[in-house]
Amino acid sequence: MRDSNLDLRVIRTKTAIRNALVELIEEKSFDAITVKDITTKANINRGTFYAHYQDKFDLMTKCQEEIMYEFSSIAKQRLPEVIADLGSNPSPTMPFILITSILEFLNENSDFMKAVLSPKGDLSFQTKLKDFMWKTLFEDTNGALINKENLLVPSQYLTSYMASAHIGVIQQWLNNGQKETPEEIARILSTIAVHGPFYAAGLKK
Image (cartoon, rainbow, N blue to C red; front, side, top):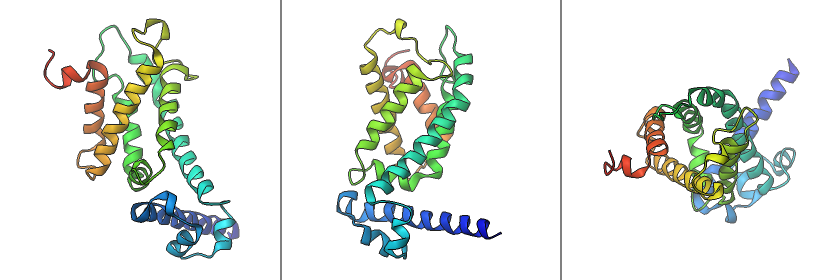
C-alpha cells in the first residue's frame, strides 16, 4: 500500500513539474526558464525537483523521451497493418490507421506538444520527430514502409519533405485548438501523403 501511495505521489509530482514547464514555456520561453521558476510554479521545493531531474534540460529530455516512446509503441502496433494494406493502387486509407493513432495521442498531450513545438519551445525536438519518421519509413524492425530501391528522389529529401509537411499540419492543428478531430486531420494528411498537394488542391484529378 505504501509503495502504491508513493507511486501516486511521484506521478502527481512529475505531472505538476511537467505542467509548470508547459506554462512557463508559453510565458517566457524554454531558454529563459530557471529551475526556481519551475519549482515555484509547481509549488514544490528544489530538493523534490532534483530528486527526479538533474536540471531543466534533463526535464525536457525526459518529457520528450516519453513522447517518443509512445510514438514508437504506436508505430510497432500499427505499422504491420499499414504494410499489409499496401497494394499497387494507393488509397488515402493506407496510412490512416497509423496517423490517426498518433494524432489521438497528440490530442491527449496537446498542451506539451504545442509548447515544445512552438518558437519558444525546443526546436531540436523537430529533428527528433524527423529521425522518428525516417526510421518508421525506412528502418522499422517490423518491415520498412518504403523500399529505397523504388525511390524516385533521394531518401533524405523525401523524409525531410514529408516530416516538415506533417509537423506543419500538426502545429497548425494544435495552434487552432484542435477544432478538427484526429480522424479528420488524419484523413487530410493521408490524402496529401498518398496523392500529393496538387491533388489536394484540386489541380490534379
